[in-house]
Length: 160
Image 1 (cartoon, rainbow, N blue to C red):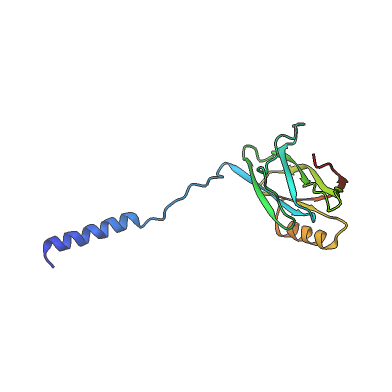
Image 2: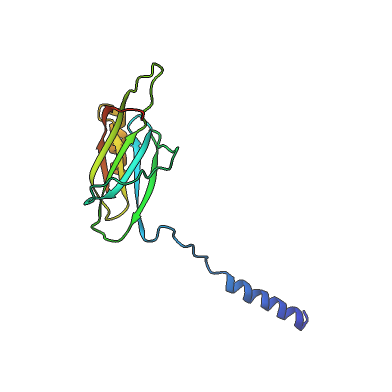
């Protein structure tokens, strides 16, 4: 190999060695903690309100317009990680949908007054009268630390 070829090879090795470090990705939720809302109520959820425990205002709906959390699914939301003792309230509401006769059935809703944010949190809305729903909710609680179970309340609600 001539001298030019050795220099090119050495240059390639140096460039490759300089680039061999692992790329670091910036965590988009670096200063936030997640709240996962699990829906085991048997109905789709259309409203999720997450707000500080000392705040009487429920604030805006964290679900985007035309979005739902179908029963059996979950969505994650991110709150600021300012204080490890920070506590949030979570309020959820099912979608009011009239049946074929135009009657609005009982809609599920739930409220957790104290979700402690000492780490990622899980909130599970479930139907206490449905053994499968209750079993699934209990399984989620056993699989995850910092889980709050919310028994759903069922009431008639207008379609607005």
